[in-house]
Image 1 (cartoon, rainbow, N blue to C red):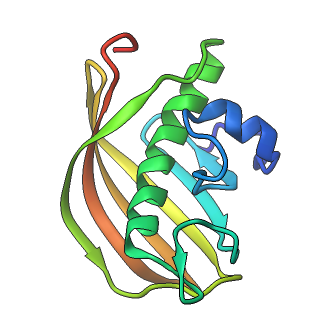
Image 2: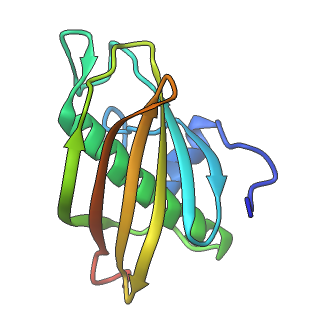
Length: 148
């Protein structure tokens, strides 16, 4: 069940949910939030620092998945009235990049939480563009020790 009353597209508000700052923000909307799932989106612009030759790079897709995980944690902390914690990618497993999307395309990233224990989160993530999966991975993230 989606716990959002409405989608969040206020960029300033989203920045408060993430430990990232411009120009390294790879999400621009929160579409769905539940205890075990989140959906974000990103419209790729030519100004994005991870765009090369008018295409969003593979590292950009990986970072988009990781920031979607961070967005889940940040919004969860927001609901608890706590500041967004700092976290790190602990491991990337089974990462597959099928296509590099062009600028002006919108990505929809879905992350499903498989396990979340003591600040370590294991997820399955997929990125879609134009209705097809263009990247997917299994990731493990960890909160910084002061946040765990």
